Each structure stands twice: as C-alpha cells, then as structure tokens.
Image (tube, rainbow, N blue to C red):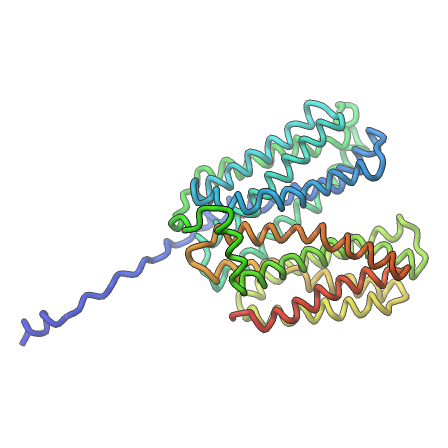
Length: 402
C-alpha cells in the first residue's frame, strides 16, 4: 500500500520565489528617484541663463523644450537597450549621463555649452525614467508597485523643490565671490549624483529574464494591444494636464483677478505643493485602497478642479481648483504605469519605453491649449483642452483591472 502511494505521488512543480527585498536595496532606488528630479532644474536654470546671456524668450524656452523632445526620441530605444544590458546597468548609464550633464556647465557658460548640458540632462532623464520604473518591479510585488512608484515621485519632487532654492541662495550670498553664483546648483547636484552611482552599483538586484521583443517595430506593435494603447494615452493626458496647469494657472489669475505676473506666479507653487502632498499620502493610501477606488477619487478631484477653473473669479476659488488638480493628478502616472507593467510579464522593458514616450504629451497639450485660448480670446479654451484629458481619464477607470 505504501509503495502504491509512493508510485502515485505526483511531484509538484517548483515555483520561483521572489527574493526578499531589503532596505539596502530600496535606498539606492530612492536616491535614483531623487536624481531623476534633477531634470526639473531646467525650468529655473533657463531663467538665469536668459538673464546672464541676454537671450530672447524663444531662445530661453528652447532649454526646457529639450527635455520632452528627448523622451520622444530615446524612450523606446532605451526599452530595447534594457533587453541587452539589463535594467540596473541602464539605470547606471543614465546616472552617468546625468552626472556628465551637471559637470559640463562648470567648464563654461556660453549658449552652446548650456545647450549641450541641458540636452544631456534630458537624455539622461529619459534613460532613467524608462529603466528605473521597471527595475522597481523586480523588487516590489505587483500589488505594491503603484504605491512604491508614487513614493518615488515624492522623493523626485524634493529635488525639484530644492533647485530654485539653491539657485536663489547661490545668486544672493557669498557664492558669487567664488565665480559660481546660481551655478553652484550644478556642483552640488553632481556631488549628490555620486551617491546613487555608488550605492546602486554595489547593490545586487535579481532581474527578470530579458523580454522577447527585440526591435523598435515590435515595440510599437505593442500599441496594437488595446490596454497598452489606453495606458499610453492616459500618460499623455496626465502629463498634458500637469504641464498645462502650470502654464495656465498664472494666466487665469491675471485674466480673472487682475494680479501681476509676479503675484500670479505663486499659483504654480500651489500646484506643486498639493502635487507633492498627493505623492506622499498616495504612497500610503495605495497600499490599502484598491487602485480603481483611488483613481476614481483622483479623477473626481481633477474634474472638480477644472469646474472651478471655468467659473472661479476669486483668488480663493482659483487656488482651490489648482490645489484639487494638483492632488488629483499626483498619483495618476504611477497608477497608470503600474497597470501597464502588470499587464505583461514578458515585455515590461518595451512597455516602459512606450509609457515614458507618452510624456511627450507635455508638448502636445500646451500647443493645443494655446490655439484654443487664441480661438476664444480667453483661458477658457486652455481649460477646455485640459478637461478633455480629465474626461479621457474618467473613461479609463472602466479599464482598470483592480
């Protein structure tokens, strides 16, 4: 009888178990998210470069435009690069390019020098955003991925906040005597960039096997999958609303309330304050609340914010609308990105490249908003374009898988 039981016993297949993630692995990843925020210094730095070199507005605006341009060019190829050298090595490469971009301004301050530096900063950021997010998926289970990416966005926002403060400090204190002025930002961030290079390089991370797709054509064919396409458009809408609000909020206060440009500029800070709060709180909320439920709340807040931007005619109403949009939009990227990555187990690198390419929406939306505002002769046109993005995200709710 015993022998019969032995004979009929079927061996169970062994399931691969994800190695336990340690804080020693998470810390270098969060340092990388901080370095990811270095790209946001372009907005502040371009104003100082314009003043130093006597540039026109169109020449100065070329610098921040470069960031979104390189996302369009490098995102998908970076997804393929990860298949060849791995996600961690691609992140290390992105850190190297970022570090180089921060060292170049210390060698000169001409227009060409700054153009090269900001171009490399945009390329490094495109490489990092494409590779770092899927690298996180090697350490975090799918149900915790959105909350972890959201916390990473919060860490990234800290670097974004510090850039204008450091520039102002360098421009108004003893630093001008050292010949650096606001450019002290570059050696400070370059020194900080060495931390993730050192810590991530020394951190072992078990990566999944390379994905199957091996060409740019095969990557773009993934957009033929309806859910991937919906996620791609969702990322475009998120970034469009993000950049659009930053651009339009001060104009609304000038148009509706009669504030000066200097006074209305605080509207952008209001947006970033609530966006940062949203990233921080969202990283905890998403660990206990289903993604669909929190996404519904986020879209509802943005819809309410857009309504206030349509009808608001006081500072309080407009600031409330801006704050609602800032908080509501703060977690959309992480939730949509996590949904896209979790929808496939074999093509995460390519999917990541496509999602990051969607950041090009930061160029498309402002252009459409400008034309719409000119057509109606008021900022109602710009708000209407952003509202279309919110409507799309509302429709996307029905496709969220959990």
